Length: 238
Image (cartoon, rainbow, N blue to C red; front, side, top):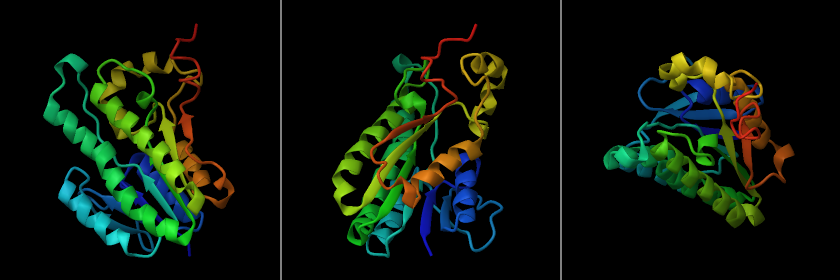
């Protein structure tokens, strides 16, 4: 049985990834912060607060000497909206912990058994904001850019041992994270060539491919899943 570990699988994109990988034959374990959610066995949940470095370190330490996971998918994240000039340093550091440092620690632990087994798939869910500026997203963008840089480095360092590491960059996706911006939805959709927000399942399907045997030669890739947003440079449709 192939095994997958999904970090942040409680809802939204994470829940879609959990369900999709399970449907494709993976034995899935996912982490959640407070509420385990609606999943039933054999899908297993583990409580983990990515904002707590000591909890992340303890969880990662358990993975270092265990059997290799076939796939690791990092989904869990948080956001903090502020102009760069007024950004609160502590809040920005908290975003970096959840979105970048937690993944770096867990990936460091998981990749070692994968390299010993000479096989493994690691997928990080980032954001198009990690590559393109967006007003008010300095802290979030910085964390996602750091995540991308780490993914590329890990990809080239582990490639000879059969491990692939890739970065999926969603654009605007229908999740709870977008709820506070409902008043701006119509204007935002006007910037997207597809003229709509993406669905969590559309991200999960890309992740499932990257976690498959068929993706064995896809490594260190930045894959936008954004309805053409970055290709158009965000220029509004006429």
